[in-house]
Image (cartoon, helix red, strand yellow):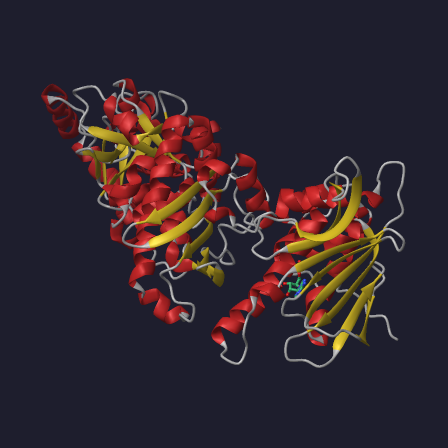
Length: 627
Ligand SMILES: Nc1ncnc2c1ncn2[C@@H]1O[C@H](COP(=O)(O)OP(=O)(O)OP(=O)(O)O)[C@@H](O)[C@H]1O
């Protein structure tokens, strides 16, 4: 009988399990029971949708059998079973692409990180067993097969005897060591404890033979030990339990069991709706971001049950994209079992549920923001970008719903603030909500364009993510206050007296500015005296819809159309550099005027983080100045 090798990644993971020092080894049982329950779900669903099969609930269960003599723990189920090919495919490779990716990317991390963050399913049995045997007979098959492995060296698959359809997992437990007592997994009380802790809500009975001490019938003073098979779990799914019966720990355990994430959920939402549409839902807002969240691989969706039977693993229609981080399930009596994906999309009930859920998630986030600011900030750090994306998408359809959940860093408060907080402390004379765009808060702090607004004592919101400015352009206003970039050509700050002064200045320097515009030609839309600069010599202002930061973002996109912001070169006429330029102009020193103009233009580009077209020429010009 030939031994087959595990796939390379599986081998690595398996090796890790075998040598694991993970403290919560008990979770192996949760993983095996969860697989067994999934397998029964599958046969149950098959029976409900296939007239030739019938499902008698009494015949479907999970049986746990410890055997101290052989040192084995057996978990048997009456689920759908696996064919020879399925045994090969499912148990020879890692199912969880997450753990695989994590492992290959972080080779130095230890097993605690892997198990803690991704879970490892079936392979976790190798934490406690040095030999694992799986005997399975698939539905519709006459032949059973045995898969057997003693660890990373490989596995064998051979024909086997098994009367009924289903799977038996037999773990031969490792020998006890000073630190680890594997034999505890053969003790009735310990098994009962683990099952209750992690698998209480499994919808099928988890049966085990237990010994009970009872008063004798003939003499109540004497006790006798009676062995009988009992169902250990309560079988009531968590979403059907009374809210008052559930503790935080139950929600946390359910989240882990379901592999919704390997962090602790930040918040849970338990919905028991009994109105127009009847459904139960348990939803979670995760604390940390799944490793593939902002990638194409990430699939949003909630598990969908029809009266206790799972009909879809990831129902995307239940969640809008901006809440795609939400995990959980929905169970409704009003949904038909045979519903296809296409029909489901049109289903009125489902639409109602989705709308309702959307509302509840929003309310929960608002509550979190109000009640626990620091938790909300943790959430926002992970998923804020998704909310901003939500404001922008679908032509701003959801902006009203989401605007109060947004936060930005504030120049004044030096922390994240909401739009409502910003607007409520705006001085009376302030007309706009000001923002500045840049790569980081530190870089924005140094942006010349912020000088005038900051000098006025106005608060500035810092936009450091690509989506920020696009989202705000979609919002246009918040509480009747328009958004305005500190780089926009008209800041709406100057009074009449300033305006007159500016006009005079513009007039006095008109010839020079015209000359500079001529030198720069269509690289800029115009050159003018700056109202916003105090200590810096030069900066860009923009006119129109596209800002410089938007230009950068748009030009990074594939098939970009080389969109350009309309840039105005603004000169600080009080600066000594301008004075030198003016002297050269008055002396008709053409080459100097050209050189200075180009230098100023390039400086403005650098400040904005835009590339200089000819860095060598720029550097040569500086060298000439230094000589
Ligand atoms: N008792 C079982 N009956 C039928 N199939 C099983 C059983 N146990 C495992 N399998 C099959 O083996 C696969 C691998 O199981 P494993 O626990 O490694 O990952 P998973 O269950 O797919 O992922 P996750 O653990 O994240 O839910 C399962 O998807 C299932 O197809």
